[in-house]
Every structure is written in structure tokens, then in C-alpha cells.
Amino acid sequence: MMDLKISSHKAKGNALVLQGPPIRRPALKISDGLVEAYENKNDRQLQRRKISPETFLAIKRRCEENGQLGEEFVLNYERRMLRDLGRTDLAEQVKWVSQESVCEGYDILSYESDAREKFIEVKTTIGHGRIFEISDYEWRIGCQAGDKYYIYRVTNIRVKPEVEIVRDPQNLERQGLITKSP
Image (cartoon, rainbow, N blue to C red; front, side, top):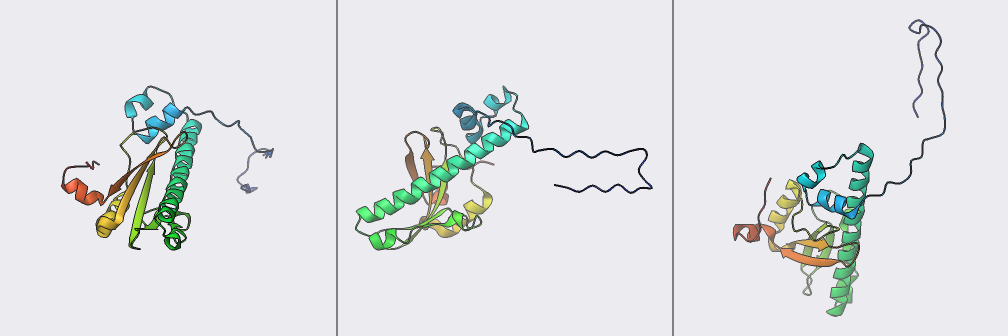
């Protein structure tokens, strides 16, 4: 709430300031197709529709929720995998880093069965798309970490999540197996 004070020598006539209850708008229904188009940067599909600022914010919120769900899925996946390998000690150390700091360049700290660290960046979608954004900073951290850096692409997050694991993306790019574009 902002207080407004009008200087008496600048005011002409009468000023009436009304304050009412906050406006509550019903939650917008956002289609999965629209969210997926935004996640996959499908500009052609998005341009065919008029998208209000409120709808755009709702799409972005839904994408953030998808990201949170994906990170939680990977956190549990890693803990379960380490327990299955008999490494309960390491499973207990798996950490959801992005819940404490968003500036690390990865989301999950996990471990190989031999206790080597794994830095996992999670990229999630509601659909099955293989295209995703990675920030310059995430890419630099991945380049520095080399084969300790993983990208877990989680697809179909709200129905039946699946994960594709990409290890050392910079090396894969050098081999022509993945493509990075601006």
C-alpha cells in the first residue's frame, strides 16, 4: 500500500482518495498445450493466440511449478538409486541445492556409488520436448565440472515422469551429439 500526500499549494480543487478491498481474480485455467508451447519456445503456436499479461504470468507460474516438481522427482530418484546400490549413507547426503541458493549453477548435489560428487541441473517439461533453456552461467559451471555435471531432462512431469540423463554436456557438444544455440 502506498500513502499519497498532496501538497496543498499544488492541489487544485478537491482530492478524494478511495481505498477498498483488494481485487481477487479467479485462478486462470491454463491449458497444458499452452504451457508446453511456452516451455518448448514454440513461438509460432504462441503467436496464434492473444495472451494477456495475467495469462502469461499464470503460464510462467505453472512452468515454475513444473520445475519444482521435476527437481523433487530427481531428488527422490537419486536417493532411491543410491539406496538400491546399498549406499544409504550417500542417499542421506543428497541435497536439494536450489532450495537454499539459486546461484550455484545446478539444482541437486548427489553422488556416484563411489562417493564422487554429481552436480545435477534439472530441466523439466509437462510434455516430451527435447529443447530447453540453459543459462550461460549453468553452462559455464557445467564446463568447469566436466564429467561431474549432469543435465536431467524430466518429461511428462504431471502424468508419468520420465528422465533422460545427459552427462558432461560440453563434451557431448564437442562430439556433435547435442546442439547449443543462442
